[in-house]
Amino acid sequence: MLGAVLLSFTPLLYLYLVHGVSIDVATALRAWGLIAAIFGAFYIVEPVSFYPILGLAGTYLSFLSGNISNLRLPCSAMAQEVAGVKEGTREAEIIGTMGIVGSVVVNLIGVTLCALIGAWVFEMLPPAVVTAFRSFTAPAIFGAVFGQFALRQPKLAPFALAIPLVLLGVLKAPVWIAILSSVFGTVLIGRIFYQMGVIKK
Image (cartoon, rainbow, N blue to C red; front, side, top):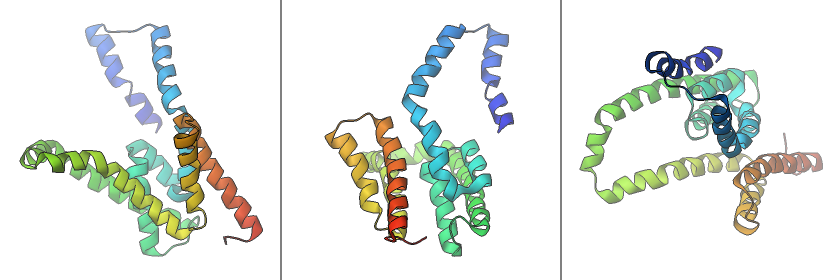
């Protein structure tokens, strides 16, 4: 992870050393502030909400390779479900990590092929199909992941849906508040239900 962080500065060093392109610290901090304002909630939410499914090694792998919520998380969860292991156990972490590794390899091959022939294939498809791919692929993945976990804890699923719907649709709250409230609100409700005996461990 530290190596990836250092290597991510390579393009900047190249631009500075070879082409003399640089920006002042104030501009860099202002740009970081804009990004942090948009994605700041994810700094807290993603590690907390993903860790129980990804495990330690899977978390490192996922944050290094990216596409966590729409690819690594579903692959890890599906691998654990297919293997029939109990969530939160050492076995589940190992199986989940293997699922993530498999997704990284397959993703690398798939992205390479898409980069080489994807544009050509998309040109052959009708515009309606291309629009559908671009508009509905991510929602379909998120819906499938939600459905997968809703089947495990169906009593929590309505609350997991209701919290963001009320915050975004009725109260018009900022997205970052909806994200934090959805994750930690559902966890809190799950804890209360567990203490009341409504749901089992």
